[in-house]
Length: 96
Image (cartoon, rainbow, N blue to C red):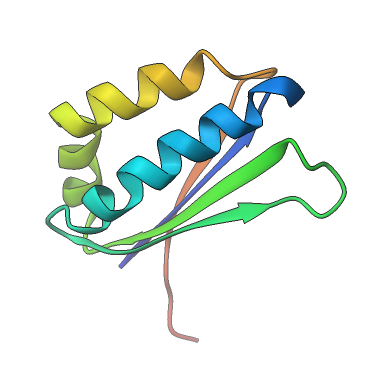
């Protein structure tokens, strides 16, 4: 299982536009093959900073989504709203 976390800092006056994009795309992302979960988190101290947390079967599934038409619509629209470059991490769940 792959955990993908993407932290995004938005222009303060653009957060509503981002929330609309997320609202309109979250169910289609969740339905993408290999995706088990997608949620949106808001920083408690910086209200214009959001992170997506998603769970994927494999890195290949994540990359298929990143190469999809859906991602090609969502990501360019989201990028125009940033106040700073996004940060992203792909992590593997481990058993200890």
